[in-house]
Image 1 (cartoon, rainbow, N blue to C red):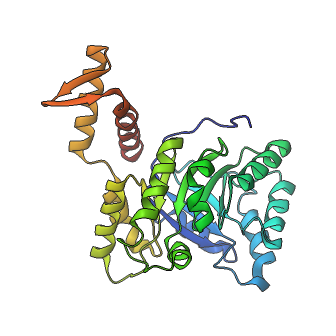
Image 2 (image 1 turned 90 degrees about the horizontal axis):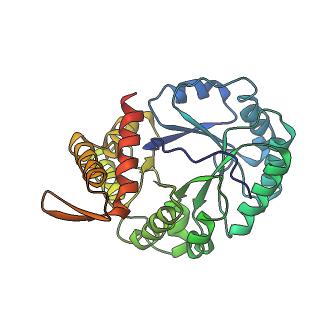
Image 3 (image 1 turned 120 degrees about the vertical axis):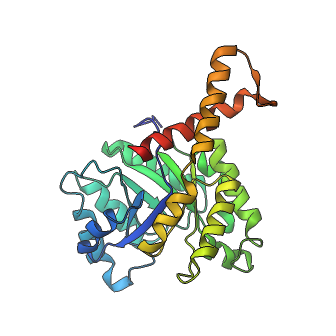
Amino acid sequence: MNDPIERVVRPRRSFIFSPGLQPAMFPKALASGTDIVCVELEDGIAPKDKAAARKAGLALFASPQADDGVERIVRINCLRTAFGLADVQAVLATDTPPPALMLPKVLSPDEIVWLDDILTERGHLTRLHIIIETNAALEAAYEIAQASPRIDALFFGGVDMAAELRCKNAWEPLLYARSRVAHAAAGAGIDAIDVPYLDLQDLDGMETEARLARDLGFSGKGSIHPKQIAILNRAFTPDAVAVAQAKKILQAFADADTGLVVVDGKLIEKPVLREMNRILAIAERVSA
């Protein structure tokens, strides 16, 4: 598996779905302020409409996409279903594939390896985003995250995961599962994106959960309505204090040329440099 594109650090603070069956909604989603727009071919599409959604959704990428800083993804159906296989065949058949695919209901790393291989054979540079929402995927999350250099992020599918774990869909019962996803993503040097908050009337609760996810190591969180996006972007944007501290730490290591330094009375070792560089990269992309 050769790395088709070097991973780029970019803001993935928020995402929103746009139904493949309604292509007219795609430009509105792109203009919503979100970092990621995901064209939906899976759960949001009824079986009778799958073929039409697939055709309309993939047709959105027939023309060159604007360089507007918004990441574009298509969520296909599970690879172990006829709908999922038809989605993959359609992606392979087009000369203008989506920039990235989101894979739902993954069970093992083998699924990702298989898709990577056939995308490579076709010559597509399509990136991959993996949803961890099954018990099997949670158990194999670390291996899944390492399965392909095409992978840019793990998405935590909290609703399906709660059903699989037979637990309440709430922060504390799902903390162990979220932690495993954050651990796996960090091990692979990729982003972890949290599940959308489903109560549209509780924006304060959503912001609290977003900040908890951020502190756990997540890079962003999904939305189900545009009114949630600005709050999510704010929660996951490094503030001025974090940016200044990152610059101070990086400069301290540059000046010291050693494996550890003391900044503001705190001992800091070199492994933190990757996160400091990530903070600065995201801050720069956001300000741009």
